[in-house]
Length: 449
Ligand SMILES: Cc1cc2nc3c(=O)[nH]c(=O)nc-3n(C[C@H](O)[C@H](O)[C@H](O)COP(=O)(O)OP(=O)(O)OC[C@H]3O[C@@H](n4cnc5c(N)ncnc54)[C@H](O)[C@@H]3O)c2cc1C
Image (cartoon, rainbow, N blue to C red; front, side, top):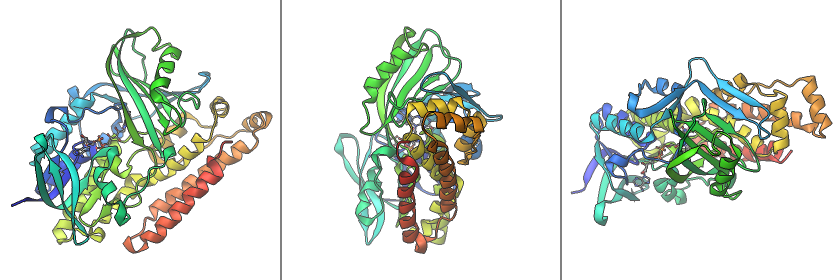
């Protein structure tokens, strides 16, 4: 007899472990499955940075072993290194996580709540019966196959989106365009001197469509890497260029702890993350901040909200798409609106060249506090002075400021679109409008200035 669960969660990362914990805490019978051995869960190539506000939202306190250090904020450098924004907010700090220990902590919370865990087990396929997902096919150690049945199956497999892809013929999945895909390369380095603050370096030639980061992880250790839009450049080759270019890295590296790559889906959230008997969370549902590519906190939020909606749906005895729809609505209102607005800003930024970024930052068009507010809430305020207008006219780019203003307006419009996320019956019409709107964004502000 195959086993029957209330919820089967594929993937024990930030999203899946949080969902499993919350669902088990609500008394549901939960199976959590991960392809990694138990002691490796959480060991992911990542920048390892997490804003404290995400933890506060979820009421989580991190034990000391789960992070290396805490920083008051982050610095952003212009391509010519002449301008620097210090993004520091009162009451918000940046954790430099020990990613493995953090993942182990989330897993332990899930297991302590009573969920069952299958490590070293690959989720291979969805079992679909009469238009509804009813379980998954697993392959455990030595390829041992097993079918598991669940009232709700969750895809929390990260950017591989193993299960969501299988629902594509049913119209569920969406393509991740190349400009929305950040291909990353990262190393954890032993350093002789550690920079005092985490830093982001912008450069459209040496980090096209993304950025290079150097995040200190306590004394003598930094997490450094870069993300570039898919097809634009080889991040591993560019990494070496950055190491030679930055004084905080050049001749300062004593050893390498880890090297690796990964993918970040940097865009607005998936239009709908639910189907009959099915939910996608975390990277699998594109729950990442498109401005900086951070997705740990929002994935945990997604997991938390999904558990709540699943419990409510089971209580009512229905797990069809309509019964799970509340997850879409709740996620869009809590984080999706911000992602949508920032996705417009991402499109605008990706159309800039180094000269424009240098001038923009030198002219103070966006102040640190405004950038922080945009990153936290998706609302962007500008500081366009007459002097700045003269400067941009002087370099033959008088239209640049108009485009920036237009971007802010489109961000607000897109935000409203997601605030007005529809019920199931209005979804297809909304989806068509979103697609058309996004094409307009590319047309109006995404083209090179
Ligand atoms: C290079 C890089 C740097 C990043 N830097 C940051 C950062 O500094 N801050 C930040 O907030 N975010 C960052 N992110 C994004 C962040 O890592 C993700 O958004 C977040 O981890 C998503 O969580 P998740 O649970 O959805 O997926 P994941 O954390 O990827 O977890 C997915 C889990 O599913 C398991 N799995 C996958 N396929 C299967 C399968 N078929 N069967 C069974 N198990 C499976 C995996 O083993 C894994 O445990 C970065 C990402 C990358 C690639």
